[in-house]
Image (cartoon, rainbow, N blue to C red; front, side):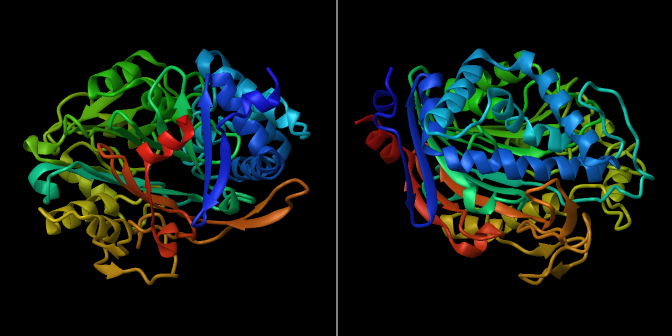
Length: 473
């Protein structure tokens, strides 16, 4: 099939500062369109951002860049057998599209790039497990640099949301401003030949990343949720995002995918069905899956970066995922709920991932009970108050540590890294990469992506159904 035919209906445009890629067809066709239209940007991800990730892994693990690169490639190789065929075809399409556009990139490089954040999650904490599940402890390695937490979300409906009671969903995606990334944040609108049309946020060359929502009213968003049991022998963020958005329309269908698909790093997946007005947080490790539902049949659910699947806490019953998080977050005592909560508050803990956010969401969602409008949802996602210190972080002042002034609107200090050329020395820090408020049932959504923290650049309105309609003409 000629390039012209493969590219039919696909497009890449910039609207109000938001970069929008639209793709349609089989997995291969969507990948080809993606690769061809974003070839130069994908080249930068492979030849700049990947080098930065290698430098990050080197610093986290106390290794040199050559060793870190070897670890990175070994992780990709271990993950490859678990890659679903449809996404292997999509990555092949991306590779062929990039090369058809005159840019040289190999399939293995595209596969490596698509494991980027799964491997980032494995190495982002002390007491990590290597890509094949072997436990390591680098707590006392002076090369180790604690970094900020990543992501948070909430949803509400019926009387808690107020108004007409439609399910509303808000999400912040937090991550590093690694080289070439801020100017390459993109929104992808996908209309698969077999599956639901959907939208997700990502970077050039990635088949998925942070979640999104589909035309069936299902939304899935992800949060870093580090666990003791982690390995690259499974599927990660991008794969689960696209599996659910393409093939699931209900919580039951989503849960089946999690139960029947091997997993790698610790991630919390916040899933909501806007039609049924149901939601669940799925906490995962390579070994276990736990499901946390709204407390006492309430109409609200939220998640940050610390596990909350502790039996007896907020109505949860089941396996104690907190126990598996204690080691990697250096929690002092999780024997009881009170001791666990006290451990989360320890200001000397440099590894726990911003637990005050979970408490702050509870406060704000109670404050706006019955009045969670778009404007108030944006206010919640832009909040800079730390309930642990009872202080409001100044707009452009970074957090003191992982656990002091870590607010919902995230901004962390710069860290210096040393990557191989052509990148060289660079500084990067964690902040809100993008933020989104959604009514999944109607397809209406507002996205902030034009600043860093993203909320500072304002939110732009779109409608998924309109975007899909234009794509399918």
